[in-house]
Image (cartoon, one colour):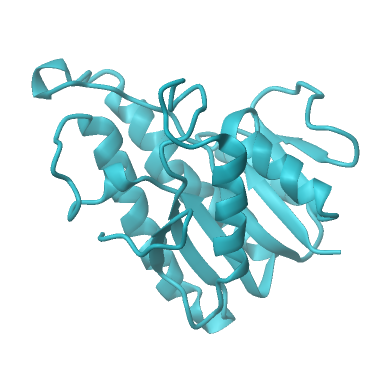
Length: 218
């Protein structure tokens, strides 16, 4: 039975990843910040916050020695229209959750990912410097760009273990963060993400792709 750890499964994409992987017979471990009992039967719920290293270490201790896939999904949104509305007080929270947090989770849990396994992080085209033609959203863009840099670097570090590492864009998804006007249903996004993940190999690592499998500019 293949196994997956979903970091950030309280709602939206993370919760749907848990549902779909469990439905296909995977052994699923899922982190939430607050216990809610809503993950379903057979799901191992772990309490952790990506900004709290102690909680990540405790969650990792409850995992089996080897898992096949680690999904780094936890994140927060930010919607500054321009530089004048950049909230300096909230900027550290956005950066800590979206950029540093996934790397802390990878450090705590990555040792449980088997050699030849996979680690993926949910990023965004808003983190792409090459595709930034719209401006705005400073802290969110900066946090995802920093995450992309970290994931690319992690891919290089884990090459000796043949672990495939990727940054994935789920699309503009109808979640609490994406809003009702988003283009992609959460189930369709996650189904696409899972197809992309299934196609990752140790020789195809350090990539930035969307849920359809299209390569994205860094």
